[in-house]
Image (tube, rainbow, N blue to C red):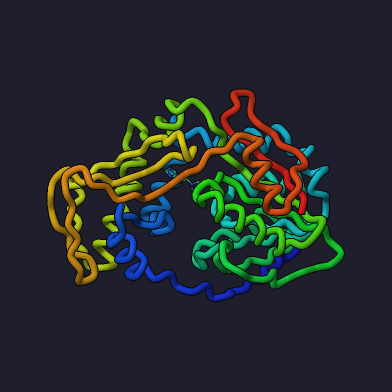
Amino acid sequence: MSEPTIHFYDLHPPLTDLKAEVLTGLSGQPKTIPPKFFYDEYGSQLFAQITELPEYYLTRTEIAILQEHGEEMVSLLGNECLLVELGSGSSQKIRLLLDALQPAVYMPIDISKKHLWQSVQMLAIDYPDLEIHAVCTDYSGQFHLPYHPDNKPKAAFFPGSSIGNFDPPHAQELLQQVAQLLGSDSTLLIGVDLKKDPQRLNAAYNDATGVTAAFNLNLLTRINRELNANFELSRFEHQAFYNEKPGRMEMHLVSNTPHEVKVGGQTFEFVTGENIHTENSYKYTVAQFQNLANAAGLQPEQVWIDPAELFSVHCLRV
Ligand code: AVI
């Protein structure tokens, strides 16, 4: 058996300033906390549970699309390519692509050094012939690929409708950055949640067992722990609803009583019904997303959707 090759590049992503961002967000009107702070250790575990919930159709539908159309995707992405994965958390999905595509090089990019290191160790056991170049950085920031073979087509995989957590101008900017990173004649395979019956959407973010509520409230537990704050979780309720006009699911934490909270030495007042806006998750029609891609300078080449028209996977050419 050949020895797996792992190259690890730590580009030292700047530490996010939780305190500054939370204090700024809570000082605004309405109050906000950025969704990137959901993903501490426990938050990441809760998100993994969300992806298995019966109501949260996104993950399983995207996997079914990848399984169903893998061969066609391979013909567009090209064998023997350099496969970049943006935000490599979902090892199940990448395994499907690695099996179908058999890339020469796999380049996972993730901000969490620990998770990235653990996941490439596991992958190297199962794919001993795969050359892995793992990059620890924030994929939404500016950086260059540290390994850039000229003789291989480049393809990137951005699954899970993570693009939906950026508002459309930022989503467009991110697509432009990815295009620049990959260079011309490369491809981007991207999972995007579709617009649909709001009832279905509302159920996906208000699951019966309360995992999404726990995921949302865990933000306050994290802030209590890391910023020495005194949020009482029983004073807040999870709220998630589809906002038709901007076309997005919104998550909020709503105060059920008038009270004060101390965070990082500052005091914040809450009135009954006041909310902290914690996440947007934009939904697109196929045409809307193709327009966004075009505006970012990427050409829509193919799109696959499931029979129930819940989710889309786009292939875009740079
Ligand atoms: C990671 N992201 C695409 C998820 C979403 O659906 O927007 C995060 C999430 N929020 C609540 N449930 C899942």
